[in-house]
Image (cartoon, rainbow, N blue to C red; front, side, top):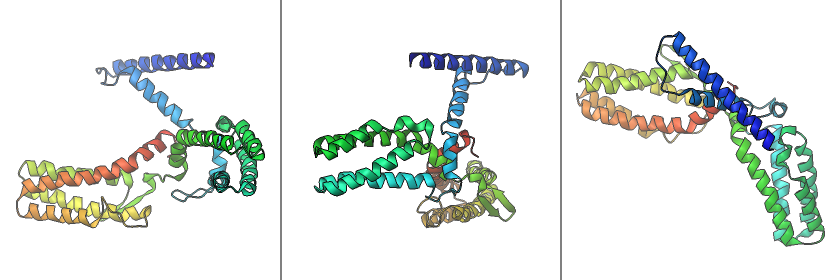
Length: 302
């Protein structure tokens, strides 16, 4: 183990040195000053991206061949539900004093557990076969106290795997790439990123022009903003089939309309205040959606 850690540390340092040298060479070649990010920071960012790309084993891909974004169904997920159901059945039946069905649940669980443990070789370390076998012996000897201890230990290994791997699995296989979302506008169809840049430009234009006291320019930016915001609301249906209660909800559009009324009345101060409040709605959407999208991009699955 110490040798492995030593090699890893050397590789990290080597990556940092190479990255630092390349960054400085690039800066000199371009005849510009060093950026705010230090070479070590860039090196570790690059290293993190490399780790993200290799964070899930390729052997897992075959279980998600027919997986559709946002649809909770795959061969792997089916295995997980089967494991969960039989595992919980052991504890539930034991709590009810039903040892016959507790044993039946155990037999189904143990068989499935050992079968799944071999499907992704890189993840075998997450499966505690020894404790599963102990649980079988403790159930057979009617040792309920030891059985529940075994169940807790096995549950911890499941939780550890989920904590380590589940976010990446969700991002890679279940998260829809935002660049596949179409935004239909009066000027034509836009993919998500250009639409967001256009929306941000119109949004900023309201505040910038209001600060200058330019009512006409503020109104022009507002018209563009409201139109694009409406188009984005329609585009949300690419993924969502239920009403949204923030960002594109009726109360948000009521504030957008109020902002337009302020601008028409020449009240650019209150229009700017509303603009800042609307920015919070943008943040609510970003903080929910962007982390998974960023993870997906770093994993090289876009």
